[in-house]
Structures are given as structure tokens and as C-alpha cells.
Length: 140
Image (tube, rainbow, N blue to C red; front, top):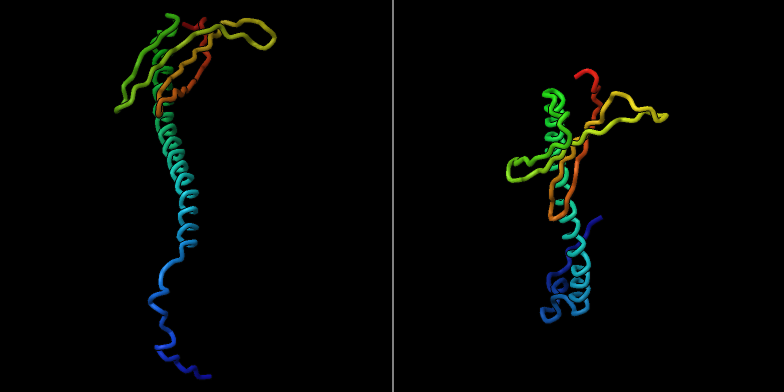
């Protein structure tokens, strides 16, 4: 089967009718007006999630370090401890609390609950990481 090429003269459009119609331009602008704000909001949320995740990882590491330090040095016996840590360009506030630990059934053991909380800001909102462990007060 052979195809004959069409003459060039019949394929050309009329130059006066080239381009988009007004309705097509308005439809494209309407589409962009809907899509762009949604896309920008998606990028903002992804940025926030990334920053929170990065700083939460650092805050967890800080809390774990202070929890271990308080256990090893015995400083947890002083009651409420707190401080501030500067890591890179970010500031983390931490607080440690010691509370009596009550077993199921209401009996109090010699165990103490040592909790370390680390607070940090991301885009004007405060987040926190909390870790805890049990310490036998009779051993120290």
C-alpha cells in the first residue's frame, strides 16, 4: 500500500487564524490558579515534615545522651534537672524528671521513673521528644 504525500499548500494553516482562542487561554489560567497553590502547599508541608524529622532525630540523640549521663553519674537523684543544648544552628531545651514508679496493683517499688524531654522549635511551633527508663533506687 502506497501513500501519496499531500501537497504542502493544503497542509498550511491560515496565518491569521494561528494561536490560542480566548477561551483556551482562560481555561489554562484557571487550571494554573487551581494547581499552583496546591503544589506550593504540598512543597511547604514536605519541607515542614523534613525539618521536623531531622530535628526530632537530633532531639532523640540528645535525650538518649542525657538519659545515659544521668544514670551513669547518679545526677538523677538531685530531682529536676534541665538545660539547653546548641547543636549546629538549632537550640534544644531539655528537662529531666524523676518520679516514683507505681507497679500494677498500686504497690510502690524502689524503682524510679527517669524521664528526659527535649523541646525544639520548627517554623514557630514547638515539638518534643520524650524518653524514659526505670532506675532501681536501692542500688545506688
